[in-house]
Length: 66
Image (tube, rainbow, N blue to C red; front, side, top):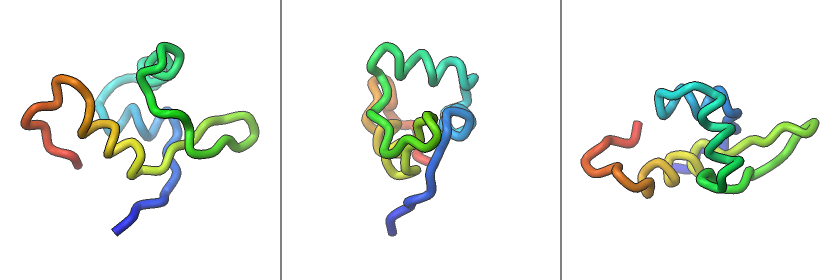
């Protein structure tokens, strides 16, 4: 099943248990996938995009996706 809900920096931060500024820094340094859409100048990612990114991140051995 595909999850097409859109996530903001805040949503991503909650998912990976960091502060939103950390997620912004990841994007600034090219560590976050490109946004799936931009609305009113704000980037958003599909939940599946972020879940796939989390699963592929270095150091993610044994961590569950959820």
